[in-house]
Length: 273
Image (spheres, rainbow, N blue to C red):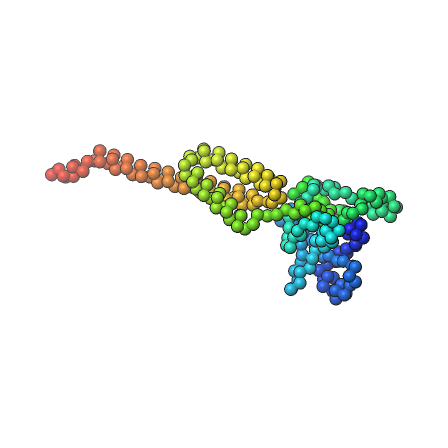
């Protein structure tokens, strides 16, 4: 990674290489960062590693090292992540500028286009190197790991680090959803409760999108949808149980009245009986 006007080159290493005594005694002008594969959840990659813990040591990832050094030469210094972070993707495959190494070797490069920028050098996507699927890629066009690293560095150098709601905020949010669900569902019949649930799910989606645009913070929309759906299902179950009990009591009461009408208790008081 070349930081342009800073003239700094950062080399990628594995965790084992980073723990090597040779790197610990390296000259001060040499910089290294650990390169590791991101976590994949259900085939989609959204997070990347800020560091790699080995015993008591926390080895800084290559992307964080590049962003930290890049900030030293610029006015705006954004907060760097200390743990796994959400990558803010600019787009899918090919959304970051790239060029072949041969163009650089042929001196077919406009210096003004790369001056002051972070430049990643590595392998692109090929048949032997699997790509990475992200929320912005298409099914048949994954992005290369090199491009994924570019999005990770761009996230930190532009201050577009995606935040997640704090645990206390999540707890308050879940409490509000639970309270409104319990109060509203008790008053609504099935049809109104169904429309209310659909309306709340749409509201969750819109509010999550707006909060993300304004505050760059991602709300736990998955958990919110699950909680609202569970409240709706529990409401249906409770009302079904209540209706079933009421129906049983109605049948029992009707059966008692019919017995008293056609088989009055006075019939057993006749001498012949």
